Image (cartoon, rainbow, N blue to C red; front, side, top):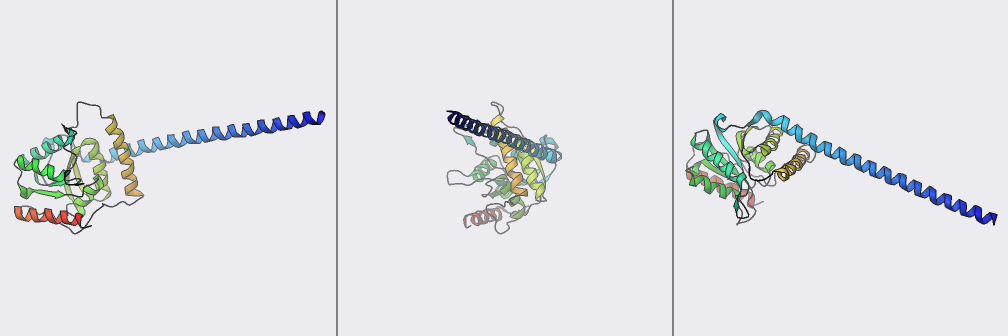
Length: 257
């Protein structure tokens, strides 16, 4: 009997010891997990604030304070969200039209996604600028502006423009300017209005994540535009037929790769 009791006690002690070790492991895992999440959140916030701080001096909030630029890069977005006009798009296009009428911008590089025939951001922007009286000779299309990085880097490396104005919303200005700064591009950005009829918390969260991705694209992954190709410089005061040819060449360079 004594031997059996002793064996039961030993078995119980071992079981208790195993549970204690398991609980200690669970606690440590949870603690390390919480610390990792906290560290990740701190990194997200730090990158977001760093990009904002680094780019504030190059953001223009008042359209009347914009100086003359030979080239303005209008970053594309969809014109409609479902069956509703997209306020992001409308404000960008209206600002471009106003700048042209004020004589502050000579040429526009319309950069956006050309995913398929029924979705073509550059062509949509071009149609609206033409309707507003902007001549075709002042419009250049970049069909390979799939991301902000592509649009900014291609403006320099394909369209040979190293000093230009970006037109987009304020939060987007910061990321675009940070990419431009990294690639030694002398750019400023006109921060136009965004939507006013709904909360932008989701957009803000997406922007924080997009900035983190941009940071790693620049400093860790050395990400390059999806398509490059031969240069098609934006030539000041060229005739419309020349502009059409340059636009077609730029389109061909993306589809041939």
